[in-house]
Length: 375
Image (cartoon, rainbow, N blue to C red; front, top):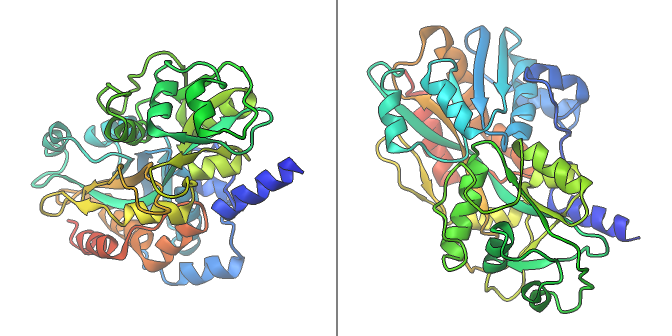
């Protein structure tokens, strides 16, 4: 019964989780029917796509958007079969480096470019520079596996001390205080973090540093800086390790939690009720974001300290990073065509069905305008 209740709750949080395809060539994922929608829905969306270019389009980076990329690529290539898109979910840090080395047409990153990276991009973007285009939003779910506990509430301070190895047992007084009715065992906490440089880690630690500065002293970064814990490669690695180990806790995008049938932590944010990690709750936090990028750059500033009712504050925005000018002639048409689709109404609508939060209309409108002007 508990298992059925947990499954029902998670499916409410995000309808139809995707199966994570291990292939690097996303077109090969189509045979696993990761679309989650009917063939007619895919065909309808594909019919609205304006194709451009042909050949291979290489991209890499954020694993957070991997499930979104699977859906987008399946739909896009059903309409544009002359373009083969290869997206490697190598992690944000690796994706940015490959882009700056001129190996890819665009990169996916869960963190906006740093000033030094923008400066380096001018060598690749002849006559221009790289810009951040927010394309995917969503909650970073704190997943856990604890026998006998299917409903768990934590706050920023407690999370910070768990992931910094200051709280090491599940029956710690701080956790008991937040969960007075739960039967918490003395099981050792196994905290899993990303071993690769990750924008998910950057956003998660920004939340800890912003919402619990007294408990999390480390500067936010793509590379993990907390004490202790165990590393795992990619969001899929986090989800797999949490699922396999009683007493485990980790952080990953919501689609990885739902896809692996994992419990997720509710956050005590100071609102009247603890907040669950859902697409709708994340959208309320993302809607509070501000564009802080200059010119064509659309980097966002997220509000990790929101106490608004039902607003889930551990969120991220994944950017597609591309040259505003100086894109390679052989891939420019395909790049613009694909990104136009992902930013379109159809492309954004597909996200909500997969555990992601569409980018707010005011922001995505600016993204579409910038894509139209890519050169």
